[in-house]
Image (cartoon, rainbow, N blue to C red; front, side):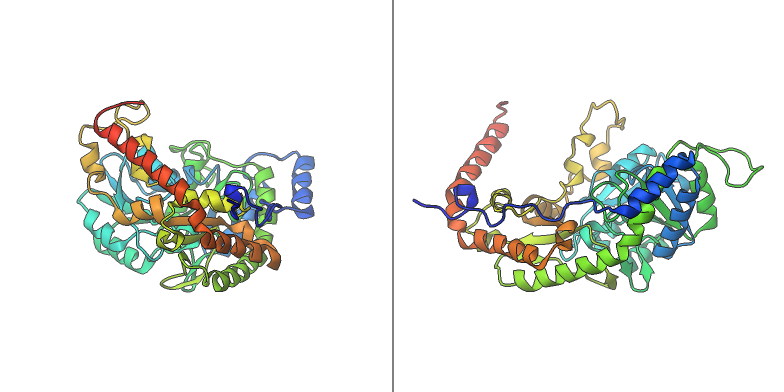
Amino acid sequence: MAYHLALKGGAPVRRQPFTSWPVFGERERQLVLEVLESGRWSFNGPREEEFARRFAEFCGATEAFCVANGSVSLEIALRALGVGPGDEVIVPAFTWIATAWAVVQVGATPVFADVREQDWCLDPASVRERLTPRTRAIIPVHLYSQVAEMDEILEIARSASLWVVEDCAHAHGSRWGDRGAGTLGHVGSFSFQQSKGITSGEGGALVTNDKTLAQRIYGLKNCGRPRRAGDPFGFGGNYRITEFQAAILLAQLERLGDQLAQKAEGVSAFRERIAAVPGISPLAPKGRVTRQGMYALALRYDRRAFEGVPREVLIAALRAEGIPAQAPYSVVYRSPLWASGREFVRWDGDLEERLGLHARCPVAERVSEREGLTIPHEVFLGSQADLEDLVAGFEKVQRYASELRLQALRQNARQRARAFLRGVGVQR
């Protein structure tokens, strides 16, 4: 039998890679060389100060601070707000683990809430269910180019006197109404890791409009040094970036506006074409989103339109066709981080009860484990031909999904066997 799908031996839709990331050019080279020749390579240099000022303006904040990465940025934000042992912080169950890990790092307890069907971001209704007298803060994550329902989240925070830390690692340039992501809550956290919308390989930033928080953030990221000469030292660590990173970020920020516009055009064209493929539905901006800062395009997969093929088999088939489809993040509370007996996590005996691990988050689990797909943002910086190949890959796999049925049946049988062995206590 001759197969059509590349996974089964057929010819792939595409052999050459899509647009690579990061994008850089002469401007990055020029600025990095200037730093090299200046001899000023460390913290608080002119490039860092310039980038912080420009990034604050871009977001619509009065202050921005560069830090080592987008994980410690969340930790610094929580420390600046006074969150610590005995406190609870509500986080989405569906996000990168750093969101919850930052809560652990300050000695507080992450409490997992479910996400919404329409945008995979924190569900305000689930947040309300998790509120207790120990709740001190909420961390909404603007996940996969979406923006959380900030109006409702902010109202919950106001009524319960809670802090709001926006995790904007995926939201460079996103806007909610006339305000930039990161400026809606008390502080916003950004990541400049390699895959993000602007990048220096690693790096992060915090933005705020609160002068008191700004003073605390500066000391916390800068070894406890005061911002004003003569003020006393305080608690802090070394979470700084170098001038080389700041130079790259300056050039990256200069490109961001044009890149966001190009990605928006590419995503719009993809939405129109993929509408003809049953079972694949891109998430659309919801609420008062007026601009999306692209990190990855989120897609919902309905296996019924693909002969019941599990998502993992679909992804394998798409990648064989040259399409860079990916699974989204795992549900955070299923991470080994929470396993008892791990030396780096010291919890009391009621951990599972406090985290709500028994309650589960059904939407987060379903999206994470069965329905979610993502396409990297850089794909949408490509040509019209690139977008046509992207759609063609989905069309082909959907058309010949029957070729994957046997593989899917075998995978399901293996999964059932593993589940049975776990049920009877057999270890492999």
